[in-house]
Image (cartoon, rainbow, N blue to C red; front, side, top):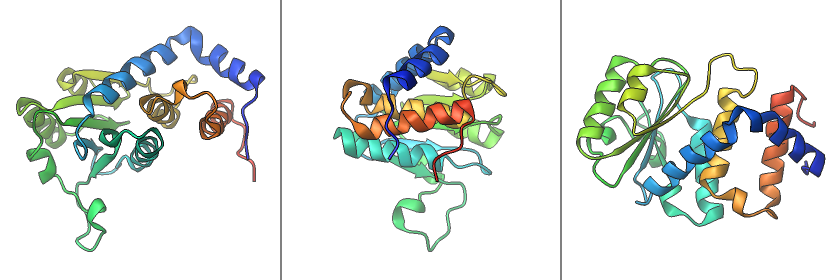
Length: 200
């Protein structure tokens, strides 16, 4: 078990604090938490080649741990196998059914293809709240109500680490200092940022 000690906490804050990353992440995560109030109404989608499995799993954990049903995400997939479990075969048609009161979170480390941008635009027009976690995609960010940009090639925080920060903050884990699960996640995040290999 990895437990984060005071020195590690201080190191993480010192590393991210001056950049404004913690504040940006908290603001974005607050928007996610406030908008994702409808159970089943938080939709996560990526590009055809990169589905946001990682963030989906983390938000699902946060929803359960924090008792926030609206944070339980629905992974929307481009070509789900017909024989996949029900929760893993939600296709792009789900975006066409997006409506007011629902939230679409687009997670993409690459420029969103035109076919995705069109669907995002349609979802916005029908009243869905659009959030984007990307690496600087002007067209996608222009459609989003809120966006968090992770600069490509950043030495400060990786796209993967940003997803850890967003999910932990969205679940309100920062309000539960005794949560050992959070300490473990933050310790893994600090290791990832510093290049330390995880314990065997």
